[in-house]
Amino acid sequence: MIKIYQGESLELKFTVVDEDRTAVDLSGASASLFYRKNKGDVSEVSCSIASNVITAKLTPSVTALMLGKYEAELKMLDISDDVDMLDKLEFEVLKSLDPDFGIS
Image (tube, rainbow, N blue to C red; front, side):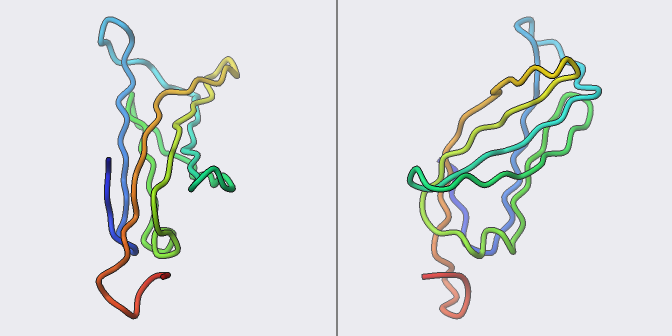
């Protein structure tokens, strides 16, 4: 499980390949990372795409307001308007060691 502290950046990179391990052309595609804590409300982060790599980034201002374990799914919309779930993961945001930072 990925672990970070409140106020840190979390950058996740996903390399998309086919069954032959060949890079997939992601031209015209879009992707989002959806995440939630304890079956709660779902938040979405738009991802950037370069070549066959999708990057999702949670900024320090976002993670400062997070605490606990989260589940996430990476979904992509291709040029044919097909939605594919590419990956599932879990991450945890730990309380900042700075007592004046983040949420309790």
